[in-house]
Image (cartoon, rainbow, N blue to C red; front, side):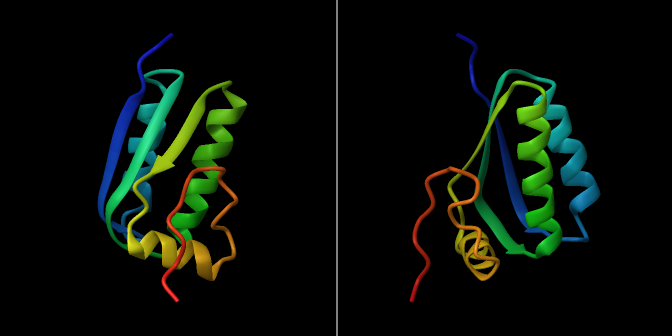
Length: 98
């Protein structure tokens, strides 16, 4: 059993950081078969961040790897809720504030 490679995203998860974060996530996928992406310190997220999550999850699955998102910050929860994607990734997510 291999160790889980952990990656933390901090700050913006937006169009302005998408390229840098894409490279970071692709590098993480090369590090092992199980990757956990901690989203607890994401302060802002837009549709580019959502697209990157979808692409990373698909890339991992295509490579026979497991990628999990954890620690969803309020910005991430709000954006996923707005897009009706809270349950899409199969990861435990705190329910949105109502």
